[in-house]
Length: 130
Image (cartoon, rainbow, N blue to C red; front, side, top):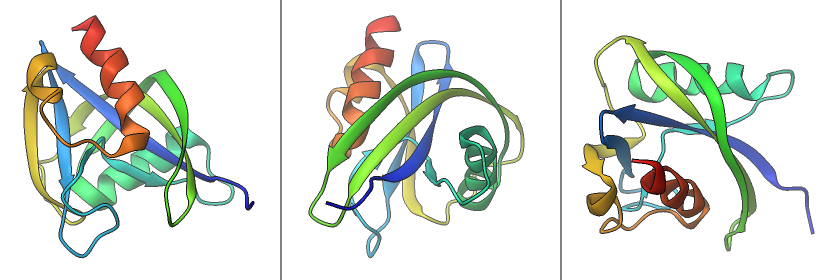
């Protein structure tokens, strides 16, 4: 078995809502909801990778805060190690490049979405706190 691919995800919270992003058609896990982020490149810290990914995927500048959780999930295409962090938007307007939709959802609404499996533990953890 190969080493897991290390990725990071941003948990944005606004009051009692979290930001969910839906993967665009033609992308891996198309149609599933996730926390935005991506792969950690060699030489990057998880926080640096998340800042870069948010700028690339959503055109946002964000502050990366506390770690939420780390989960390991094996998909058909790879094993993913996802570390999520609480984040705050500093500047920018959402411009989607990797996703075809975003929604601010309550904990109850989050339970109705079809989340990528690696994101589910973080969704459940954050939902229990809202």
